[in-house]
Image 1: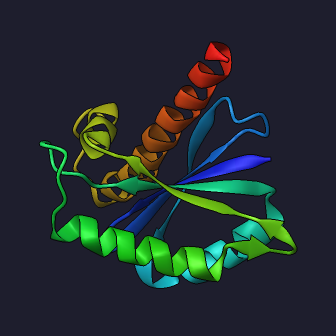
Image 2: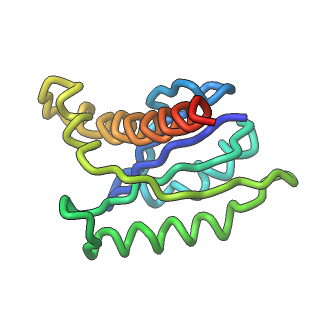
Image 3: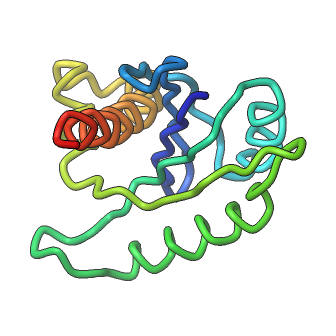
Length: 143
């Protein structure tokens, strides 16, 4: 089974997809926020995704902001709609995304073209998802 990473934004939603062993991931696609439900409907049917990791925008001090509240509400809406797909349970969780957007921009060497800015959302989703996957691997070794 695979994992899907999501970086929810005000306009764009970046996504990243893991390999079947949940060891690595790569940026997948950036979609318009208005199209995210249609996108997820198709993707969750065609890919064996068992977990969706949504970037959780905490403040630097670890608190919540208006954006945090907005993202949690949207995640809850998507989770209610896509908790089960074709008889398969899909687990939804929030994962700390602090600095993922800055890292994504740095990965593109500061390019500010519209295409690069759009792609940066999927790169940020990959950083979020890889952090989650690394945590899974660390805890697997610990056991």
